[in-house]
Image (cartoon, rainbow, N blue to C red):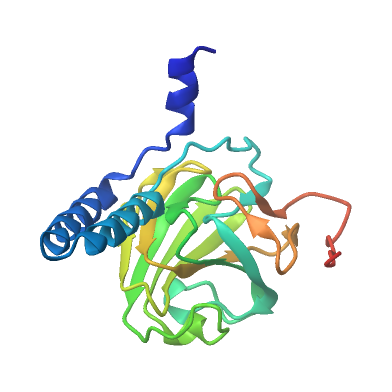
Length: 232
């Protein structure tokens, strides 16, 4: 590997959704710098942070239909049996819900947790309370997807947080998606809920860090049973 390859692999591309925001941050920095030089440098730091926020790194995706992958970078904030949102049409019985909380420093590009076909996309207006709170699943603005997978219907809910004010979803009902494929983005700090069909066993613990498209959240067809974890 030569120097050019090293630099290319180190620099993470910015998703096109972020171009306009990076440009706005930089222009504002120039304007502020015209009046006071220190403000330019502060604005430049914020511009670099904005570029970092909208980074879109490549991921190595496990090719196994028995796995449910994390749809987001972040921290596992909830692992519990919960009744899914009514608009998803997943029934009234509790399903395994695994939540990934994204702070403002995480990559916010969302990826499909499974391979399948998008059956449902439902948007719901709501509040903007802290996305770490359990009630955010029902109270906050959200966009829900249902993906028909090998093991049944998987629910994926994009939830806006206290800072996040914009949910973006690029896929449509009837479209096929691959595991790890990019399907949306949330600005700036938020949460993803994944509802696992019956038979899936959790493979993460609360507090664990997850990587979108790489970290295994749940698994089907394993005789190992539930995987328990602890802090150490």
